Image (spheres, rainbow, N blue to C red):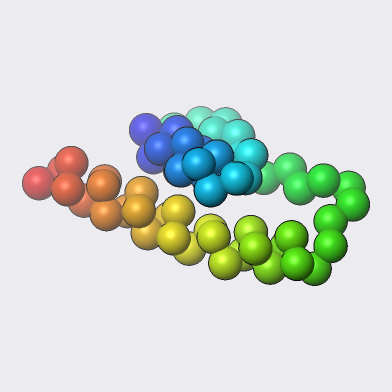
Length: 61
């Protein structure tokens, strides 16, 4: 499932997210988060999603 792969990749990048369903991710940032931490997450997220999209496309061909 796509969300499961994205969840594992995010964890590898140091971020904890939950895969609620096969296609839904839930983020739960800490109550106290600074700008640097948020910037780090926002910088990492596109790479996680790109990797999942690439592996999903390869699996479907």
